[in-house]
Amino acid sequence: MLISEYPREDMDTMTPPTFNDIVAARDFVGQYLNKTPLVSIPKLSKLFGFDYYAKCENLQPVGAFKVRGGVNLVGTASAEERSRGMVSASTGNHGQSIAYAGRLFGVRVIIYAPAEKVNESKMQAIRDLGAEVRLYGRDFDEAREAAEAASRADGYRYVHSANEPKLIAGVGAIGLEIFEDLSDVDVIIAPIGGGSCASGNCIVAQRLNPKVRVIGVQSESAPAVWHAWKERSLKPHPRMETEHEGLATRVPFELTNTILWELLDDFVLLSDEEINEGIRLLAEHGKQVAEGAGAASLAAAIKLRDKLQGKKVVGVLTGGNITTERLVATLQNRER
Image (tube, rainbow, N blue to C red; front, side):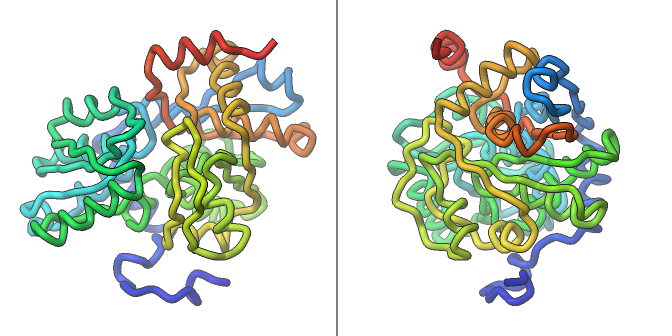
């Protein structure tokens, strides 16, 4: 099914960004954020038989890729939208991105987050950026519903974590930077929570070199988007038990999934322990701190290593917002 064939209730907010939208977002966001490095990791390349590069979005000001989308959306919002204030839901990194942009452009921001199993360090980071945090519900989707209700009741501009073309356009600049630094890239692997990172990279790859394969990755303990991609369905999935909150999605989102249905080449599911091994390997061999979602791209490359032999593979290290305690525990729990 093509994107143009998929029914949408709101054609303005649900139309996918174009390649030109991504270029424009890159130029706008580049006024506020620096380009992130694409780092070759020779030890991992030798170990697994393909040239592995990490796109280090963990080095963004908020420690995650989503800040690109936040700056693009808030920075190009109308004066009327800014005056209303903005409300959204997040388990951490998306909330930090909107909070960072809110501080940058003087916009009030309210973030709803789940009250259970929340990453408190991410919540405090949101507060430190000047946003209000409201804890509600058992998981992200219940927090999202509360944020939507607050928008309706109080008139805030609701910012969906995925169904926003300007968010996707902003993070799509990751793909532009990858091609600038490694024009002969063969494979790009992107972790998927809501799907904006993979969607943006798909649009860029389709335009610059359709032979480049874009592969998505998700935890098998929260496989909602994987099921949506396989079944071409937006049905919620009952299982969302992953310990990696950046991948914890129960409800697949329309805009990103319509892009992935058309353009994503493959989709891999990983166990949480495979993702933890990615965290350990990035720390040991790449000297990079990654949260679970950020390490999932490497873990997927390892799982697909027989198919990737001799290729140039870029894994998007989407974020490094892992608590010190959790990082230490993960590094100490390597299976012997």
